[in-house]
Length: 192
Image 1 (spheres, one colour):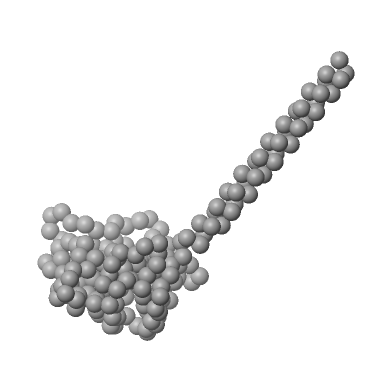
Image 2: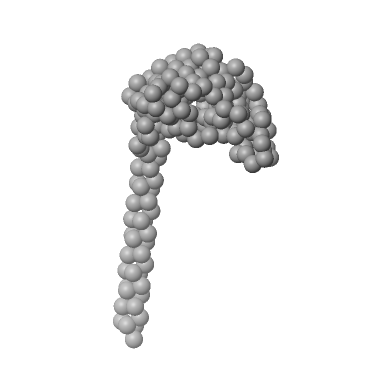
């Protein structure tokens, strides 16, 4: 009887060690996987340009002329008509907005969403966005046509207590083609 109880104890002890080893292995594999993913979010650019101010920024075939820096509760077209797209207010947040015009000097339409925008706010990098208005200034559109000049907003959503960005970085590919794996041909760092 005593030897039977001892065998059961040994089996339970062995299976408990096995389970602990297996859990430890899963935790290590998960940690390694997470460490691998941390590098996946990085943005890479082949060529880098730095500029100061937002008055005139040349991004391949696009030319942005900034006119005003401001904080806004919501971002909407200046002359909305009936149904329109807008960026709604969020409690405890505000939009940092650079208003201006965007001109497409190229010979084909450009999708502004193919330009990734980030802003450095203190020690934090925030995602931003470039939005273009239609010619009537009544709604936001997805493209800017060849030879067209439109009103444009570059914006970043910030918490109320976050500092104003010290720089805005534009990542883009030649001819504004879509990026693969956060890898871009160019970055333009605009010191504000």
